[in-house]
Image (cartoon, rainbow, N blue to C red; front, side):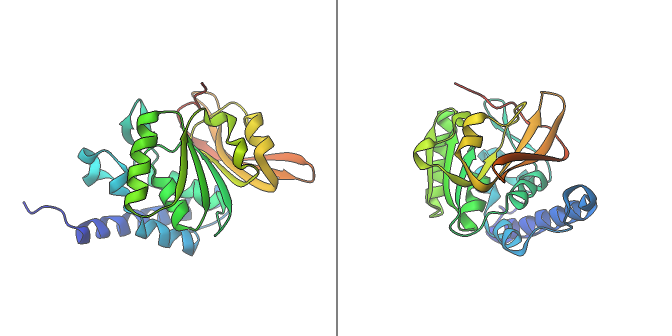
Amino acid sequence: MKPMTEAHLAILRRHMVEVIDMHFDLAEEEIGRDAPSNPLRQALLKVPRHLFVPAQLMVVSYQDTPLPIGFDKTLSQPFIGALMLELLAVGPGQKVLEVGTGLGWQAAVMAELGADLFSVEIVEEFAQAARLRLASLDYQVEIRVGDGSRGWSDHAPFERILVTAAAAEPPSPLVDQLAPGGRMVMPLGGREVQQLSIVEKRNGGVETRALLPVRFTQLETA
C-alpha cells in the first residue's frame, strides 16, 4: 500500500469539516447556529490535525472521535473542539487564554484565527510537544507549564478564555481575569454529568448558560 500523502490528508480534513457541518446542523436547537463561521471553517480546513496527535494515530486523526494522547488525556472529538471555538467567537487580535494546551490543536486553530494566544498546560511533556508542533507551523503561542485554574495573571485581562477540562463551577481566578464583556467556554459539572457552558461578564455580574451535555476529564490543580 502507498504511504499517505498530504493530498490524502487534505481529503480527510475536508471530510472532517463536512462531518462537523452535519453535527452543527443536527444540534442547531441546542447551540443556536446551524454551521460554523466561515473563518473557523477555513481554519479547520487549513490546520493539519494529524500533526497534533501521537504519530501512530495520524491516520485516524480526522475521525469524529476523541483520541488518547497520553497521561490519561484525550484530544476532543473534532465537532466538540470546533463547537467550543465557535462559541468562544475568537477574532483577530483578541487576547485569549487557553487552559489545557494538550498537544496544541485548538491552539493552532485559534492562532490561525488571529488570536493573541496564551496557553497553560499542567503536563510538562505536553507543553514541550505543543511548543515544537506550533513553532514548526509558525504559530505564535505563549505556553507555560502550570495550574491552569489559576489563569495567567501577568497577561490578564483576557477577552476570551477556553477551558478544555471540567470543573464544578468556573474557577474564581479565571473569572477575575476575564475582561468586562469577555467570554469563557468550558464544561461545568462533576465527573459523570457535565454541560458545555458559556460564562460571560456582563453588567458587573457573571452570567452562565449551559448548552449541551459533554464528557471531559476533570480540571487538574497543582
